[in-house]
Image 1 (tube, rainbow, N blue to C red):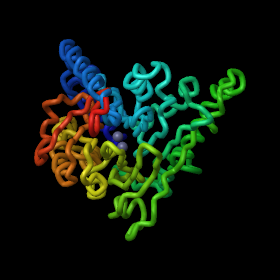
Image 2: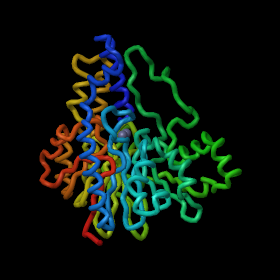
Image 3: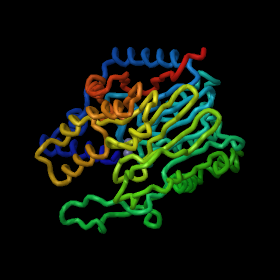
Length: 401
Ligand SMILES: [Zn+2]
Ligand SMILES: [Zn+2]
């Protein structure tokens, strides 16, 4: 689970400080990858720009906006947290909205249109789950979007998880009763997408009332339509805690003249619901895993797709920041990291089992992992492997221009 990624870094840095007495910055450098050199950064930017020029020749394209996983300010990289978009002609569909997504969307799309209002072309936003590294820029999209194209006549549709409904089981160290742990917002401790959006309007009422009443911007209740994804009846499903990933068929979430979007439950326990999404277009299909361990449902959803965008975590990094012997808390974090995400060496088989043509890595943990550390994703997969980078674009189907 994503918050555990942040916790793991904290624990590792803390332990280094205790053991060695070194400063926090130095400790951080011990647990995180080597930063890119200036020459590497220049060459990366040129490469990314070239992918944008190439993808402009396609009607349908995948645009990676943020490719790091976890709620962390990863040093030594300019990866921002998770967000992607599918563009079909002049329509954009976003998947997740991690920190920096608004800026990245502008960089990916802005110069193709009038350079000022990429958000006006976004028809819908799909949230895989409500961890912060997937939604941190959602407030920005709402607040800045009112000046950047959100409009009443074509409201932005937002689809995401509904309420979890029951609290997740928690790990409590020996001697600590789970009931003694704090609960935020006890009257609704597991809000869904619709609730969250309403709470954001409340939290930002000072700004929004000024914009709506004095600057005469439209009421966000009219420019954004947030909906909780309704999960169909599933045979054998008991509860989020007992059966987080029941075997099921994909179900339709959204359809318009450009795309059909389907969803399925994946396994990012204890976070629930956590979705993967599939976009079918006339030019081809793109699937987003969301956060998940190796998931049979995801493989079913992705069957025969052109592109699978899948999350990964480096097991070696987990072992490095939490080396044995581990305390009770560290052991719990270690297990969570490897059980709620997909180790990079296992993702190739997922792509092969799904029969996809291309595997694109995103939600990369650690966010500053180097390309060569991620090559084991190719194991067991004969198709094309792409190590995701922010702003990288990939055309789908035939060139149209
Ligand atoms: Zn995540
Ligand atoms: Zn997550």
